[in-house]
Length: 203
Image 1 (cartoon, rainbow, N blue to C red):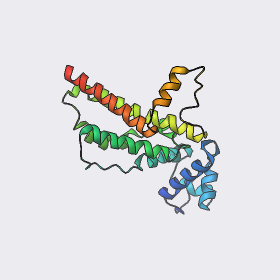
Image 2: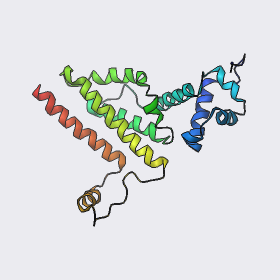
Image 3: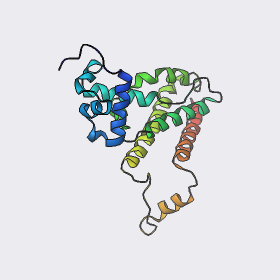
């Protein structure tokens, strides 16, 4: 199908409409027709900006990832700055739990290169460990966010109710935890950083 001669909508408006459809109907309910109806236009209008469904979904993933409040001029140690970046990234994904799986399908890592450049500048001097540090931080952040997003999309708690009779140790650990989901995530990052400091001191 060819593109119309003139754009009736902007690329950003179409992306936001696509995200709104996914927020309301989930990825299974997403279609170019649904996006067009949301914008009160006909589906061919979308082809002025996007080749196909995959391209608009990729742009939605990009839009989500860019929607953070992180600033590169934040002060503090490299660990503190990294935690703020990770928290903002996690929050951006959790604003749209139905759309969060798109980050796996269309992971726009190139959008993070500036943030990564700024981040590694403050890493420990053992540069040979930098990619492992970055790998750990990235997987902790996206793994945590995607697990919680999947639960939210289905209306489930991040951790199901634990039966003390069948899982006594886990039940005690859950009961002893006083942190919310984000607090647990941040603590996991601090524990990872503690391991990084030890590993860097050995190199």
